[in-house]
Image (cartoon, rainbow, N blue to C red; front, side, top):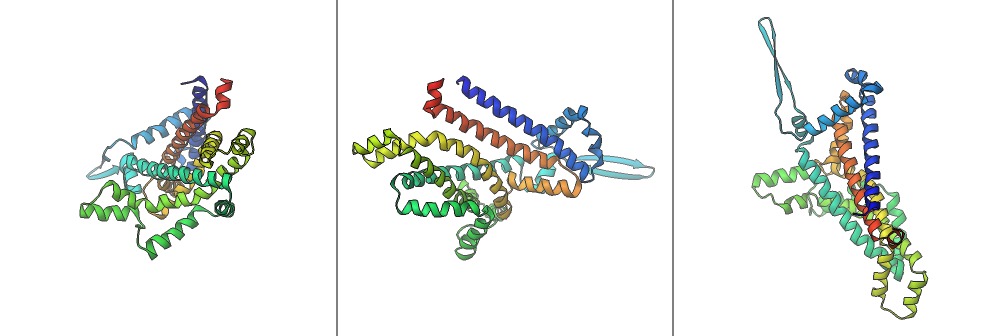
Length: 332
C-alpha cells in the first residue's frame, strides 16, 4: 500500500473521528433540550470524553444479545419489580430486527443500487457523450429533471406501478418476509424480492444524474488531441470508447464517492416507505425517540453506523482514484 493511500485513509479517519465527537456533543445537547436533565452535567467540556465513552459503550452493547435486567425493590411488605431493557432488546423491540441484520439490509440495498447505478450510468453516459444522438438528447432531458425530483416521489410512483397496478413486488419487506417465514420458504431470493422496490427506487433516482456527469466528462475528454488522433486513424468506436473510459474513470470514481452520501439520505426515505428495518429507518426512529423522550443513544448509534459506512466508501474510492489516475502515479 502506497504512502499516498495511507495518507488518504488517515485523513478520512480523522474526519470520521471529528464527526463522531461533534455528533456526541450535539446528541447530548439535544437530549437536554428535549427534557433529559440526567445528561446536563455531562455537557461540561471536561466530561466530554466520558460522554463519548458512554455513548460508544451503548452502541457496542446493542450488539450483545443480553436479556433485560430485573431489579427488585422492597418497600416494607410490598415488593416492586423494575425491568430495565438491555440495549439489544431495546433495539429489537423498536426496529423489528437485530442490529447486525439491520446493517446487512442497508448494505445490501446500497451495494446493489450503487453497482447498478455505476454500470448503467457508465454505459449510458459513455455512449451519450461520445456518440451523441437520441440517447444523448434523452439524457440531457432526464438528468436535470431527475436531479430536481426527490427520491420519495419516485418511490411512491414505483409503489403505484409495481405493487398496486402490476402486483409484481411486495410493498412491505417485513410483512413479506413474515409471510414467507410462516410458509417456510425464506431464501436469499425471498429477501432480494422483498428489497426489489427500494433498490429499483434508488437506482432509478440516481442513474440519470450519474450518467449525466459521466457524459460531461466524456464530452470534454473526446476533444483531446490523443482521442482526435485515434478518430482520424479510423479506429473502431468501441476501442475509442474503452480508451475514453480509462481516461475519465478516476474522475467519476471521485463523483461516486461523493454521491454515496445522497444515496444514503434517499435510503432513509425508502426504508421507511417500504418498511425495511435497516439503519436508515433506525435513524428516523432514533430521531423520534430523541424528540419525544430525550433518549438519544439510538440516534447516536444509527448516526455512528452511517458515518462508518461513508468513511469506508470514501476510503475505498479515494484509494482507487490514487491507484488508477496516471497523473498521481507520475507524481509519486
